[in-house]
Amino acid sequence: MLKDLKEETIEAQKKYEFSQENAIELWKLFIEHIRPKAQNSFINIINNQVPEIKGNTISLYVSNNINYEIIQIYCSDIVSFFISNTNNNRIELDIIVQKNEQDDNAPKKKPVDKLKELIDKNDKIVYLIEKLSIDLEAF
View 1 (cartoon, rainbow, N blue to C red):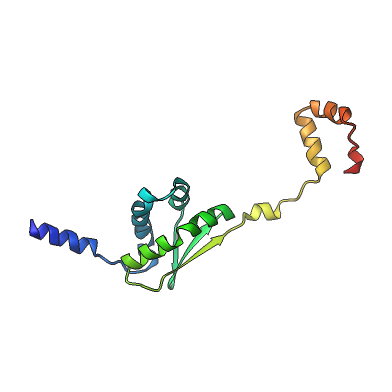
View 2 (view 1 turned 120 degrees about the vertical axis):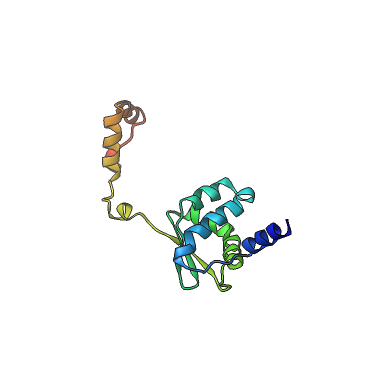
């Protein structure tokens, strides 16, 4: 029984090398560690993350500012977990918002073109425009 307790203690104190090879395993351990006390939105976001480790930095790439803000709330928890479970005590977290390149390169539609699309979908919009006496040439 004492031997089992010693083995559990040794396993609990296991420190991982701070490397990209161990990043996914450590990330899964962190998710299980934080799950009971974290918001569901945070858990959903980090479940889809693959941390990238370069030097002393953990980089997380998010798709929007809301995800950035939610992860920022738990920044100290992430860093503390990695410090306590690795051989590195100088870990930093870098959260990077990546814009969708398709959105930046897509041609922007003019309001008149958007209105034409709406009219094609719902012909009652023409009636509404006439009823409200909207001057489309003002656009």
